[in-house]
Image (cartoon, rainbow, N blue to C red; front, side, top):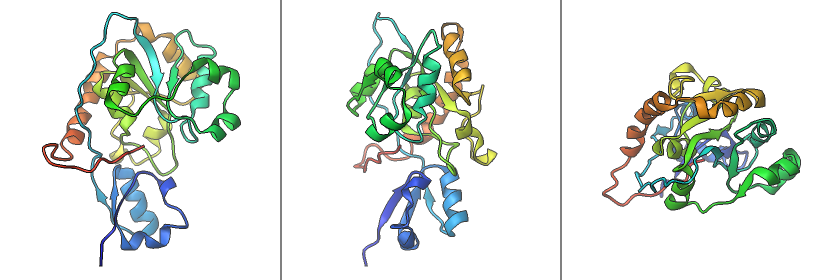
Length: 241
């Protein structure tokens, strides 16, 4: 009998189609909050691992003007890009938005004028392309939120931290889970906002904010992800959201 191993990143990946099979599979989770959710909701113990992060070469910043803030997540439901666009309308240092776009989400949720003004297009999911964006950025904004998920990291967070960008997160991402599962602490290793007004205030003061301590504390999270696998051996890449 062949065993099946799957990685579940967040609750949205559990559906009525695959739910009956969860008890037969070896399940890997990449956030402690998700591990606890599966245990509480389905009575299933999963294996938790930190999603692996490879220390790829960083492109050096040149003398061109640095951008204050970018978003590099998908433009999709649960990413709350509409909050970013609303803040941009009144911010002196608006967020430039990159990433694959869900057309249904764009048409249903986003102001078309604001979206066309600040959307920079889809970028290739490669180390070079990611570094090309983040090497010249002070803040990376990711306002992701899903019920029954949060507290831990996503690859957008890790990429930003690796490039010494301070992360601005959705406060619900931090506070929605048990405190023991919160890797991020507002004012210590990240910034957090609850709405467009709070994001606008951060963006308007971007040039005056000293992010060095926040970035330094955030970088303490990287080692466990780098050491999640032995990079000298063949590994299977996991594409985490």
